[in-house]
Image 1: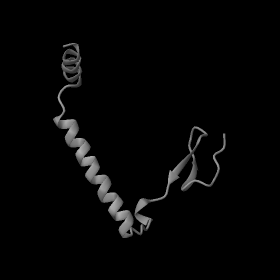
Image 2 (image 1 turned 120 degrees about the horizontal axis):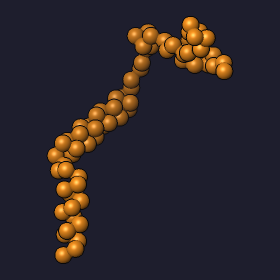
Image 3 (image 1 turned 180 degrees about the horizontal axis):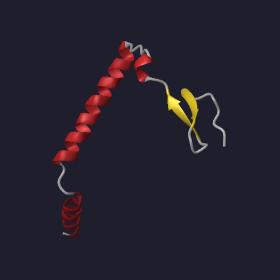
Length: 74
């Protein structure tokens, strides 16, 4: 199987006769972050933080389901 050369990197033939794609060095890539992208990144970080906080503060899921199941039975 031959990989096409439209990948973001270079094709390199390995010793075992396979080809792999080696990505370009990320230090050489210039990113232009405008205010809209920056605001989206900040919102994503905020939501990830909230999700992480919820995962830490939630009790054991088995215990939660057991309590909800017993509550519905009553």
